[in-house]
Image (cartoon, rainbow over all chains, first blue to last red; front, side, top):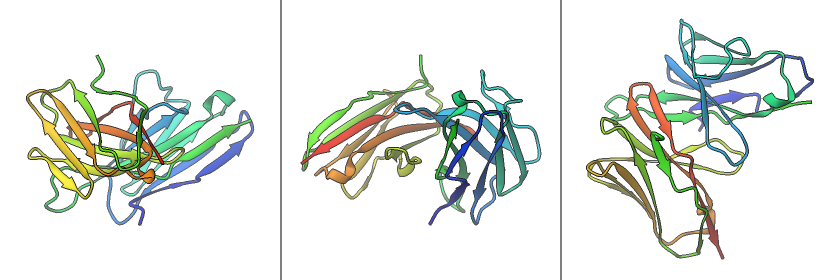
Length: 119
Length: 109
């Protein structure tokens, strides 16, 4: 089953509205989660690192006031796209590391992604 | 220079063929290495971690060459269902992951 769950999977909104996307780690705690966006036929682009209980760390060129990240608990991070415009239409994906007891590496597991379309 | 580089492909191979992808990384201190598979319009899914001694999972074999700073993925007896984009992911430290641009594989009947 899914290790990381993301919701909604698809959202269509009008220009100027805000959209919230949730990312949950299932059955494990994630002090750090990551948010990406992906354009068609391109690779993942890291937007920000979400840190539980503190401010997110944004990548260069990503507007903090545009993409609000909140990581209020050890199992939930949210990304809010504020005042969305058509150019914000994209596939947004979150991920979290799963560290198993005795496990070596801490692989990333991804949410199912959220496809945002702004009209 | 990008931290992780991959040949974007596409690699077009017939069913049953053996195909190999390489991925180079720039930071010699990188700690962990992974191959992910991403289907069109879906999230990446972990295919396999790459261990120093090399590892195999069925038709898939992953290898790490620290001296030359590359990892490889070998797929034997390709299936139509192997068609996807294969992402190389390199972990530098606890929270720093770098992604390759992905290599697209098309397996033809």
